[in-house]
Each structure stands twice: as C-alpha cells, then as structure tokens.
Length: 114
Length: 114
Image 1 (cartoon, chains in turn purple, cyan):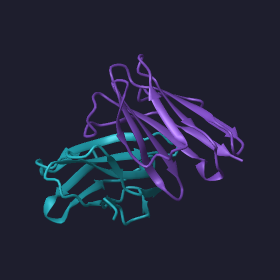
Image 2 (cartoon, chains in turn yellow, orange; image 1 turned 30 degrees about the vertical axis):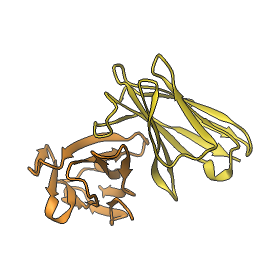
Image 3 (tube, chains in turn red, orange; image 1 turned 120 degrees about the vertical axis):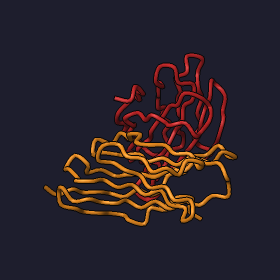
C-alpha cells in the first residue's frame, strides 16, 4: 500500500458528462501528479500540483482541469467527456515539487465513457 | 521523438530464468534521473529504483539489478531467477533537471511461466 488514496475506483458515465476524480497524497507529501493510462497512449503525464499551486503541465486537454486544496488533496475534473477519455487515471504523490523524486502511485480510477 | 524507449513490448520466460528489460533514453540535459516502476496485474504502479545521471554504479537489490550506461543512454533492468510474482508490466521513466516533466516508456509486459 503506497499511502496514496483515490476515489472512486470505477466510474461509468456517458459522453458529454462531467466527472471529478479525487486523490489524497501520502502523509507529508506536498506534490500531486495526475496521469492517464490508456491502451493506445500509454502512461501520459497530465499535470502536477505542489503545495496548492500548479507546477507542471503535460498532455492535459483543455476539457480537463485540476486543483489542489489546502489539505493537499487534489481533484481532477474531466468535462465534455468523449469515448476516447476512457482510461485508467492515476494520481501520484512525492515529497516536494521536483519531478526527480520518486513518486508513489494510488490504485487508480478506471473511467469508462459510454 | 520518444524520450524513453522500451523496445521489448512483451517477454515470456520460464520460471528461474534470468531476464533483462531494456530501456534507452534520450536527453540533452547533463543532470537527469531515471526510474523503474512495476505495474502488477492489480494495476498499482510500484516504485523500484531511481538513479541520477552522475551515478553510474550498478545497483543490486536481491534478485533485481540495474545497469546504467551513459555511453549508450541505457538503463537496463535484470531479474535473476525469475518468479511468477515478477509477472507485471515494467516501466522505465526519465525526469530532466531542467524541465518539470516525467516521461514514461511504453512498458514491457513480462510473463513468467511456472
């Protein structure tokens, strides 16, 4: 168990809808990262937050947004969902804002868009 | 261009055989970090190792060993006397000091046959 929690575990929704994925980092970790894993795109870095501020952006679509709250938990919002957004979404945390620290991953949220 | 290349998509070995997973990376930074992660069938990514670009010493941890060669931009991972529990997808990753991104390879799926 990495200490990173993600909810929900599974999510099924329809195209055009909006969903929110939640992540709580390990105790003491200040950074949260979001990743999307799909069969065709592999593991893609989406965005990183450090202590409430956006630190780095990867291949995140404009329909997606994230935030990190004062208690350091983070939410990833996905809107106007398309079939291609079906994927496993991982959250990871690390101790500080640098991307060269090891990251600890949560169990993931499997999103299915129908 | 791919920053991290794992040319082996799938490997199957018989239990107790040794297996090497290849990882080739590309960067212009002199300071960078390399990682290996394991993703077992349960889905959660597990951190295995981190090396920085200044430390070319090979590392051994039990049945796992890593060979880092800057001259060939490779960071290969060897499992000695493989076991069924080693069956997983293994990802190599790169983080550059100058940037704030984390690049994963496409992963190598290892199946250890009893």
